[in-house]
Amino acid sequence: MCSKAPYSILEKPLGTPKHVRVVGIGAGASGINMIRTLRKNMATYEHVIYEKNDKTGGTWFENRYPGCRCDVPSHNYQFSWRPNPEWSNFFSAATEIEEYLNRVCEEEHMAGVIKTRRKVVGAWWDETQGLWDLSILNLETGETFRDQANFLVDASGILNNWKWPDIPNLKSFQGDLIHTADWPKGFDYANKTVAVIGNGSSGIQLLPTIQPDVKKLYHFIRTPTWIIPPRIVTMMVMGGPAKSVLSEIELDEKENFSQSQIERFKKDPAFYRKFVKAIEQDSNGAFPIILNGGPVQAFAQSKVVEYMTAALGGNEKLCKALIPQFPLGCRRITPAPGYLEALTAPNTAVISEGIATVVPEGIQLQSGKIIKLDAIICATGFDNSFVPRFPILGRGGNVQDTMKAEIPKGYMSCALPGVPNYFTFLGPNAPIGHGSVFTLSEHIAKYITRIMVKCQKEGIKAITPSDAAVEDYSQHIAAFMPRTAWASPGRSWFKGGKEDGPVTALHPGSRIHFFHMLEQFRAEDWDYVYDNPAQNRFQYLGNGFSTKELDPNVDSTWYLDDEES
Image: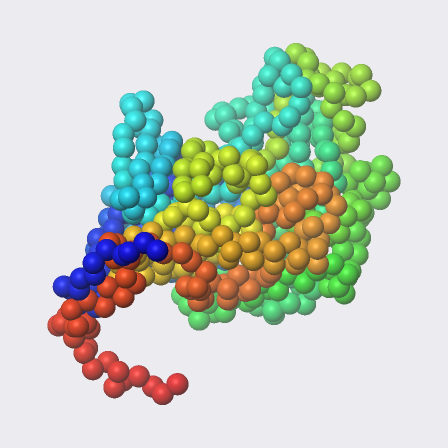
């Protein structure tokens, strides 16, 4: 048995926080919110965020394709601490969301924390020091520099690393080859013969936007997808909590708020809050739709089939190609105003036949037919494998290798086994399909911050979820997911782009279930290494005094004001 180092009293009062340095990756919504959460809840710290782009905004800075907008209602796709009554549409366009995020950064004076055009390219855990050793590439100069951090917070996002489709000879095409996530500024698609590959969220937004202006549009789809009726119609038909308040809202045929409606939101905060909470409550109630065999799913699916059939004009060929046989919710449920109608337009052709190869003049089908094109637009999404874009070396080696070799596993979506002092927003089995990422990021940030403050005040040098806790959590996920449409046969990024396989991208429960889960920190699920050589977990108790009695700004008799529980 190894003997411990001698123990000595820490000559500081209980509650004294040690100084820590926090390095964040990414200045999208999650990174921006993290700045505020640390400011509100942590003392004695440094914080810097490295952002690879020229500006803040994350996915809303990067995605600029025509028709790009959020599929979560605008007034719920915002920080709870920074409401914006001036959203112009029920579903905000990408540019408006980017402007909102930039305005928040400016008004909250966050520029000093965020270092743009700086890309983290490597992270190595130093067990002796209890620090992350980081390599950062300065994209302005091409030079790399080093940094260190007590805590590394990865807010780089799940829908960030776009990828080309796996089609033979894709780069041989001699026309315009475009990915929706890397849309070229000034690209003119008018009067061109265009292919749109993919019918995920970006494809179904892009297609109806460009269809009226192109000469001919070929839409290549591999898998059918559920297209739900306009969200406001759905809320009214399903009779949820938003139905009554929506009857008081002034919207035009394109779901733009009237100016008088915006003015009422601004001048009547009670009504505005009533509206926001009703829409939020309605969105939170969507979970039963994805539970297999339930009456809510059956009713909703029958209504969506009716809607899609009507929107496609009863066209038997289109209905067969586009209306899925898999359950509603197996793939992301997305509203797509105008998409189905655009597929029936004279200049649109839907092609479900497989692509054999790309040739210089266009696309060759498996039948041998060649479709000549001026442009190929790939709306084929992102790498959702959870493999980091740079080496992260924890106690068990490179996380990149682990994520490639095994089913992605994490602890409550925000920490990884064997990777100390590393936290992530929207890691494996995060609630990415559960509504607004803004409020999700707020809860995750508070949870992560509570852990870091615990380490600050209790002398913890390194903290990581135990292997046993992660295995138990993963076992629960695997047992739960077959109850849902997410696990049904059908190709989906929820399952890493596979037809069948474990659901790795979604939380095993409702949105409220996730919030509830994060309310309490389960200290028993974590392994600890302490600052003191003796590894005595109680050294933080210090010299017998408390900061609550020594700080003149703290009421030292606060306990007399506590109500009885």
